[in-house]
Length: 240
Length: 240
Image (cartoon, rainbow over the protein chains, first blue to last red):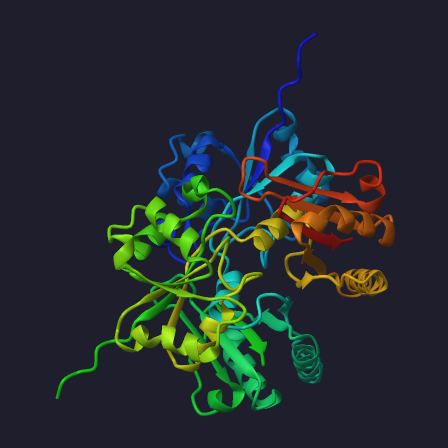
């Protein structure tokens, strides 16, 4: 009787938050060792993924690798197909476009299916803007919530701000959210207008980049000094 | 007129989640470079911190370093004192005992004070069990909450489980929490008894260690196969 080969693993591989130049600053060398053993990748954009693998001096020629594209329109049956190699004993990498896969980032559908099929999932350590922002904010890291994007409609947004301020006071719960970078400035204005003056706002911008800035102040203080957040990737955090 | 020296920075320094042997797997080499430039550290336990710095071959003799102890009883005025060197242009490291500082870990009081005084706070990349568990679970990473520890009282816990299941359905929000490792098994039993059979539970254990395991199943499936979680550091996650 021949033994079945062991199943492959699904590695969840972070990328840099900006230029690849920050690689040594944000990845353990172990990640590169793992990446060098893989030749199949689920990616958001083939072009940037190829560039990333070249940057990391992957020993296998790029044209001998397999890239599976993942976006909002990818069907479940295609994702299921992507995982075939795992069954055959070959490991696959799920590559983020920026930061860590699956957290404020697509990819969790792939992991969900891998879990359903009983494959081993191995998340690698890397830069995550939410985690870094939470660390640097000085806010409660024992109880926090990430809302993703807040409502765009102004009255819905005001309602959400009230709800968040309620949970800060009632639950001592840090409130985190993001905004499309070109709308950051208007989000900041809405927060400064809609929050109580004593509420604290942390604005965490360009994380892990040379221009990184993580600043916590009360709404009252922020009113006197507006930051330039236009098109800069930013995490917003509220607390007391 | 003489210029004031630039202020020091407060570096937030992760440590390994288990044995120091995993250092290369979980830290960028950059962290070690930064650590080697520092000689003042805010720490939870001086003894393990000394061992960690020795393991990383810190070039300065341990007895020439300064350690400030941080625990639940540390007074604000002492923390304020710890930060004096920042004012004098010297950088300080805030060292976690396991994982990343300030997230499901003490330390945020130090960061809060540094922020209040306008010092630059620099979080370094490292292993965080919550983030790794969330990545590996296959659950929603666009909307999630971390509750810390759940209530110990049985009826309060059941109430909390109902509330979490409500938020999973209503908000598509991943629910995360931890338990004291020697109580993991009884927490698992309570979840299996108290949750709906269709609810999914991810049990993420011994993250980044050779015995790492991240398994997602429905409550119905978990009922047939109980894991051994006794004294193993575990993150619990619920979703649909």
